Length: 127
Image (cartoon, rainbow, N blue to C red; front, side, top):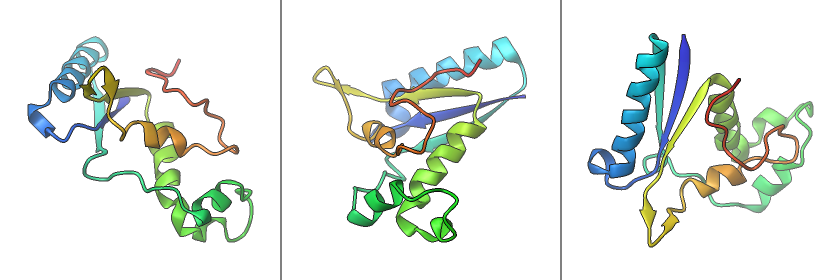
């Protein structure tokens, strides 16, 4: 079964064109692959934290350090990585205002720290 992570970031929720477009894309993926699981992550409901000194220091802490898991400021970033790793496909729905995207989808990209194997770009589907 394919797992789709649907990341949304519109304050207009279900009346958002971008959110509804993302849902349409997910419907088409379901028709193509059949059994799929969809996890929706709304960045308006759970916005990324702003950078702090502790967070930046945590990004450079080796994962195998004994107290790594207790670094409170990395909880959101670690959750982000786990959700992306668990997904086969990412569908990112973001509104466009004045020919630019809203700020919420930009911040998760910044949650990747040097120890991560991800490039600062989103992959829509894993091979």
